[in-house]
Length: 104
DNA sequence: GCCATGGCTAGTA
DNA sequence: GCCATGGCTAGTA
Image 1: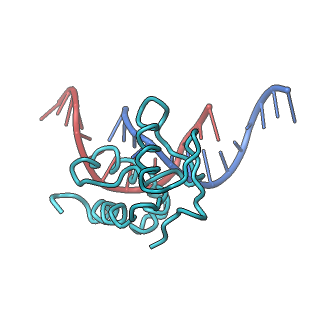
Image 2 (image 1 turned 180 degrees about the vertical axis):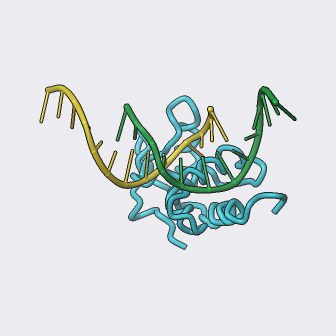
């Protein structure tokens, strides 16, 4: 996939595999890509390649079940997109991973 | 040297 | 609040 590392390609695939109405975490995506400590790489991919690869960036959250983006910098947008897909999100961005977490 | 994390530790109440 | 993690990018030589 255009000069990206094998790991990066796997991260992209893992993100794309999360279906609408479900969420996954940075850590889980990293695990799926074979990098147990690669959460930071998932951050990097989402930050820099979301629009290029049409990634469902809004479906990736922190492993504590919260949205990572700060208020005023995308948090409201992320919450709105998730609610459109039927995910219950509290106003401060908390999601029940037992109910909505996606496991490949 | 950056990045939308995560896990562990110090240090306060 | 600190720092490991790992690939990418800007910016220097």
